[in-house]
Amino acid sequence: MSALSAFANIGKVPELRRRILFTVVLLAVYRIGVFVTIPGVDRTVMNAVIHKQGGGLLGLFNMFSGGALGNLSIFALGIMPYVSASIILQLLTMVFKPLDELRKEGEQGQRKINQYTRYGTIALSLVQGFGIAMSLEAMNNGDLSDSAAVGDVVTHAGWGFRLMSMLTLTTGTAFMMWVGEQITERGIGNGISLLIFAGIVDGIPDGIAGYFATNKGNIQPLNLAAVVTIVLATVATIVFFERAQRRIPIYYARRTVGRRIYGGQTAHLPLRVNTSGTIPPIFASSLLMFPATLANFKVPGMAQLQSMLQRGDWAFNTFYVLLIIFFCHFYTAVTFQPVDVADNLKKQQAFIPSVRQGKQTADYIDYVLTRITFGGSLYVAVVCIVPSIISQQFHVPFRWGGTSIMIVVGVALDTVNQIEAHLITRNYEGLSGAGARTSRIRARKD
Picture 1: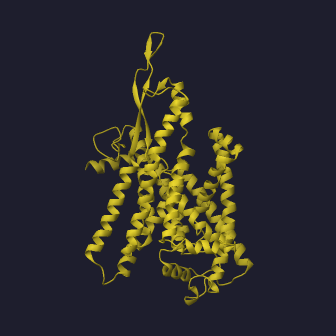
Picture 2: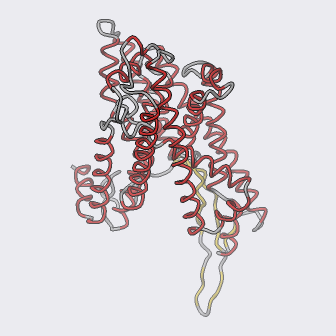
Picture 3: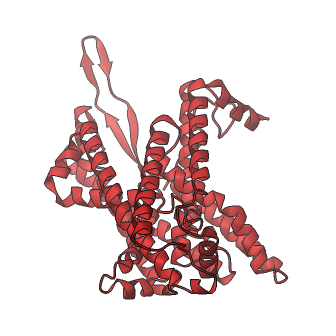
């Protein structure tokens, strides 16, 4: 009853109700668009090709596009061009001084960086759209997989088809980017993450059905129990680590202003073990898919690299782990600035016990953050790799891999947190418990 009462509180907050409804409507529009096929293709043939390849590279593309690639939809590129453009811009801010200065300008500078990211998304979409068009035509000739056995993917090949595909796919990605930004601004949760979340969740029923169809008549209860246990253990691990924090104690100096005394209080600076959230596995997957695009343009060495990076192989898993660890540290370094935090503490006349204000405080925060980020990066790598390796032994569909579970659970937790914050701000009981006006989703100390 208390849980029902907590959910009923959502309807009592008009703004929250509007935000949730707005988010649901836009996600529904996105899912409808997944079934709008680009001109001149046969999506039945494409679905058969992806089904034959199982959890290969095309399956990876198809997952992040929410099944749009299998349907050869206008959203076949998914949101990955936007993610790739974000990676490039964030890398450039580390080496290109004008972009670094824009980042330091605050909200106004961030708007310009976001605009550059949009331009980059359009450029990458045009390139990847042309690559997909070339790949589809290659399937007609039997150059890729064994699609010739099931028919032609493209009904009318040629430059007309290529240009139309580029325009259609780029428009679809631009629309998805707009939908994601609208959800972030006017809805609830992170729009880009929710689009990926919706695509993965939509494939879960098909994944379950595919598992039983593949193992029909050969389903072992112990194997099924092992799969369920792995999934539940992975979810529990993700929830535990996503809430884990290192709390640095902070003291505010006492000061007298007129007849009033301010400060003298104790607080803490929470540092999340996984500051980057679900961004590293998304970035890593996006980069590992990029050689396939370059291979379509006959870039020297890319075809060999693509053949080496077959999902499930040791080379793929090794690069995947290394990229996840790198992006965990990189994204944390970009989004969390110890120097700025130390300056703000100094302005508020706050200090960390036994640590001098200024540079020593920044160095101490950076030292602590680096240590816990390393542990957090290992957790992300293990969660993304180990369940996928084990699931291959039980022939479980790819969508049940560790990356998928982490994205789904991480996005769900972030969305619940935002809903919780709206309820608590208006003195309503939160979703995580009854009889309290403060959040019951508390962080664990590491």
